[in-house]
Image (cartoon, rainbow, N blue to C red; front, side):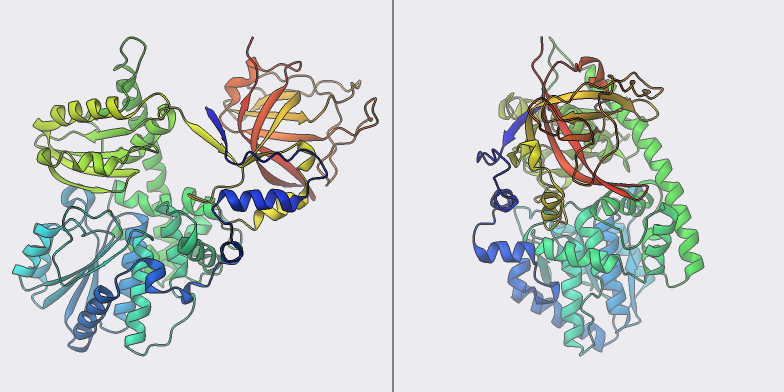
Length: 602
């Protein structure tokens, strides 16, 4: 892994103030003026956000509101046509609940992934019209910007279409009644703003945090950059989520073992959202929508249990698929080199998890990955990419081969006739070989700045918390410290996957304390100092010859247990890390969460 120090300013000594480090962190995130810094540290409330802030077109928004108001006044049948991921589910819930208060003839619709696929579907539109002869309006959420043919078909049946989407536009804008589009925010945020405007037009009483709990889930789950408008939505949305009274969400919290009031981006991205997504990947996302919208506690509990079990099944299937895809990719190695792009297809793959499998391939090998669920006539593909390789543009450049395609620069998908798989594979591999050199295929760890270990204090930790919520575009601050002394190392975890160290900024004194017992998964280096820690972050122990108290920290490196045999107590290491607070047995200690280690190899 290559290290990139974003800010070369040196924080050389204890004389450097914490405020100087904070200034570096702000500058690294593009915050230079007083106004930028103020808005970053104190984001404006979402209710103050404007059409311009969200990047929406006022004329298109006005056209959408006018048509929706007409449908409400005339009690026309409306379908909110959503998507089966967390963003689509939350967006559908927001718009459906809003409209249902004003017109009881509105219904939500979520397509089934395997049989209907992503977005509008002619058969589905036809079935909806046949079942609801009075259907006059379809509002898409989280899809529609490339669905011209399907929109035209709906209009031929006497159904107007309003598109609410945030995906990258194709060559042509959708030709429909109104297009409420922006790529600045997720679909749920668009639905939330549209909901606010609809309610204003109907003189409804608005609550400042209406639906913001769902917007937070969608914003984080869809990996929107948490800067600017998304920072406001995530920050205030998380506050709403931690106070939510939605019994469906409360049931998820209980089933997953997370505590309301302590929910952060991690809990959303890795615990809540995967459960909502699991139904769409394995069965039908309508169950997730029911959970989000239900007002019945008992039903919520049953659905939460179902989502939890389905998510476990999804995890197992993802692991199996990723393992199989990994083996097929490694088999493509020639003369010691793997292709610059991973393209793997197999008839056994379930399309609900191919995106997750592609993500695991990209994470391990750091190159774009496309995993294909191979069908007899048509095949479905899901892609994940790396910085500098816009995967949706690359895919759309092969439009002559495709049935359909959509997505973002970093994640996309397409449908193709199976007989054309080898052709598109050949094209994409050739393109990746030309555009991706060794530098682009080397994972880069961006580090905010180098600091001496003595700058790691509770004050610095508390100052960095003002930068939360962390996520894409606003990562948790990463620091580097050079020439650290490792005086205790061991592997932890059931399979010894993780590395736990104790590191010091200068040579700690030798003591007669015996070595700590290593975990059953591996041996550790001998401990050199007592383990009792003070809140300042230092450990008790004798001073060295210069009378200095060694600064000693516990450090944890997840997934780096394999490095243990290479470490030596005589070899100084450079470390890159986040700061984290460890609360245990009534004590608080600062710990280093290691991102990477480097040392001179013999």
